[in-house]
Each structure stands twice: as C-alpha cells, then as structure tokens.
Length: 557
Image 1 (spheres, rainbow, N blue to C red):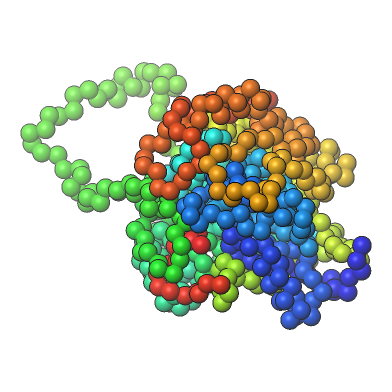
Image 2 (cartoon, rainbow, N blue to C red; image 1 turned 135 degrees about the vertical axis):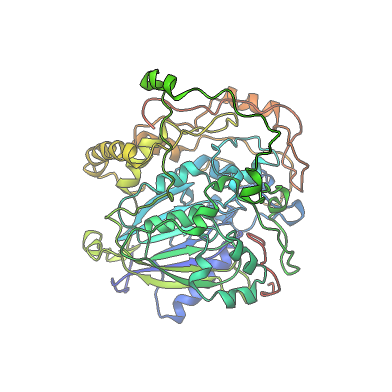
C-alpha cells in the first residue's frame, strides 16, 4: 500500500462529463490537474455517462451509434487487465453505452477492476459521502414501461434500453435521509433557470425555446433532485459546462405551473432539434420518435353541446345508486401530487450546487476537481480516512438495500407485454421498507457485509487485437457472478440467471421485428418473433473544436 500525504478535510473528487470511451485521456487529464493543485491523487473519479464499457466487437454491435462512427475506445484494455484504473471510478449510464454489458449489472457492479457501474439507479457510500445516481435519458413514451429489452436486441431495443424508467425513479423517491451527491446523465429539467441561462443560450441557441417549453432536461431527474436535495449534483449529456445554484425554502414545495403542464409526463412531447454542424450525430433516436401531439383546442370548444345532440338517457338515478352495496361505489379520485413531495424531515439541505460538464476533447471544459465534505459532519467520524491509499472504499447503503428488497419481486425483464406494478404510495411502502431495514441491519450491517466486494469477473471474452472491430453478430447473454452474489447477499431470486436453453431459443428466433424503419443500427439478424422468458420474480412484495452553434444535441459525440 502507498502512504498518502493527503489531508482528511474532504474527499478529493474528480468529475468528468461524457466519457465516450476516452479513459486514457481522462485519467491523463486528472493527473495533470492534480499536479496543478499539488495533489498527490484523487480519491474518486465520477464519469457522467456515455462511458461505453465495450468489451469486444459484439458489444460494439449493439451500442447506439451509426456503424461508421463505432470505435472500441480504451475500455477493452481495462476490461482485459492490460491497464488498471488508478483509483476508484464510478459512472452512470448515458445514451451511448454497451447495453449488453450493462444489462448484466442492473443493480450495479464492476465493469473492470476499480471501475464501478452504478446500475439503473443506486445509492452507494464512498467513505463519508453518500452518492445517489440514475442512469439513462428522458423519453416520456418509455417512462412507465418495464425493462422489456433483452438480447437479441432490435433497432428499437438498443436505444430504449437507456431510457429512464419510472420503477427505478420510484425507488429513489422513497429515500428519507440526506445524500451528498446526485448524478444524472441529462440535466434535471428546469435547472438552467438557476444559473446564467443567457450565457447558456448564447452558446446553445435552441435551448432557449426548450427552456420556455419546459422540455429542456430530464423530468425524472428534476423529481429526484427536488426530493433528495443533495449539496452537489453532477450531469453531462449536453456537451457544455454550466453551473447553477438551486435553493429551496424551508416549507415543502407546492406544485408549480410547470408540473401542471406535465401531469401526464409519459406523453410529453419532444421539441424539434436543430442540427449542429460541429457534432457527429450519434443520437438518431431523438429524431426517430414521432411526438405525440397534444390537443390544443380551447376547453370551451371541446365541451360545447348543440341543440341537435340527444340528451343523456342512460344515467342511473341517484335513488338506485344509494341502494347499491358500498363495493359498487366509485372510489374517490386520488389527489394529484408532484412525485417525491413533500420532502421528508430527514432531508434538510436547502441548496443544490449543480454542475454539468462537456466531453473529453481538446479545448473542452470536461473536468472539475473538488474537495467534498459530507453534509452531515459526523460522517467523517463514522467513516475516517485510511492512512494509506486508497483512503476510502465503496460500500452498500442500508436504506437503499431495504428499498431494493421491497421492489425486487415485482421487477420484470425481457417481456414487452408485461406491465409495471402500480405505485402504491409512501404510506404503503414505508412500513415494508422499515421491515426490510430490520433484516438488512441484522443480516448485513451487523454481519459486516456492507463493503462492496472487489469481485470483478470476466464474462464476455475480451477483444483480441488484430481482429475486426465492426461485426454484425450480437453478443451472448451472460449471468454475471457479481449480480448473482448481490442477489444471494439480499436473499433475492436472480432474475438475470436464465437457462442456456432459453437463451439459445431466443437467439435462434432473432430480434423482434421493428415497427419503424431502421436508422443506422445493424446489430444482428432480421425477422423472428421476440422470445419470452424474462419473467417476474416471486416471493415477496412489491482533437476537435468546441463551440459551434446550436445545442450540440443531447449525447452527441
């Protein structure tokens, strides 16, 4: 172990925007920045998505990216062991990822030694810091769907895989205690209003109209930020550096006009996007989906009744309704509320410092080094720094583990015909979480099993130098030992451990037909119906230039 001369005043964190497979350049940039600050090293590197943990050419075949722009990048060397990350690196998923690899690690896990994927949604502890993260980008038409994607992917699957799902956000919105850092790939909706928006609009001109329309940013990330209120929130995706400070009053937030405009957020429309000539277009799905047109007719015109219309004749008299049993009575409508509100008393921070960063290219503002102290000063005493490097290690979060146990049995994977269980509300979930929290305390906390095991294992074969990078064969589906060990730790059924027979039957049928024309993805065979088998678990409840005009598009290279 290396002796450290770092002070223990805070955790030294490097934050990077979009990764895009440039690990070597990112680590080199962190090293240069550390030397400029006279730091020996950092404790943690956070990458805000588009990490691209591509293990081999088959993984690359199912990454959302036009074929002519596909590159393996630097990650295969870290996966195979040729290189090792110099310090703990964590990342959330963006919209250009090795979906076949990340599918194995829904709950998170090591994609290579020292490089940890946060999963679809997660809360982990790194020393005294508590970090919450959500992967993916906002696409309202997929928000309330289950995780129906499973190999072999078709053109639609390879992109819908990274669309945020309500079931994952629901779990984050049930947290009742303070976190220190929040992570999302695209920005929380409306955050631009809390910074120098005019400067942002000068750099990205079409952001102004999207901000006015309320379509700039991620609706689900807004919900999570407003609930968790971490002192720091980091994002990427839009390829521009932007800082903001969002303040909250001591009173619970009331529902805003903007919330009223998106009560039915799963049918939110997408604003038209202006092409940016300085960016390579990797995010073709933004233009593929037809927006759902809202009915904009005035309310008065929608309810006018003419004299020629017949009067209603099939209404049941009130006297007869009164004679029916209580079970026939229509239940009162559930009051509408903003998801995650009101904020529980265990979350007390009132100011969120937001920072979005660019992608790793010369001349871009993609990296920020900072020394972060926990919101709760006592956490430094509970999680003291080691005298040797690394000073801190990753740990599971007990509250999040309890929430995970409550929801695991209702998860569905690989079945597009399934539906997500309805949201039962906090009054129903909190007692279930409290009960599981007791189990976590007894079986994991007291047993000393909170440390995230360093149990990385190869699943797919690493890329072999000299072989083609571009292939049209899809990857195999694997059972990741890390996911198996995590499920065993929590006494859960491993929903990702499918039989070899089932996997071969799905592979022989090929990807499901795509309802809309393909726009550049060539990831495997054609035709064939989608196989079933992703069932429901049982047993419990619930060198480039920066700048340019326009947005640079969400997630563009």
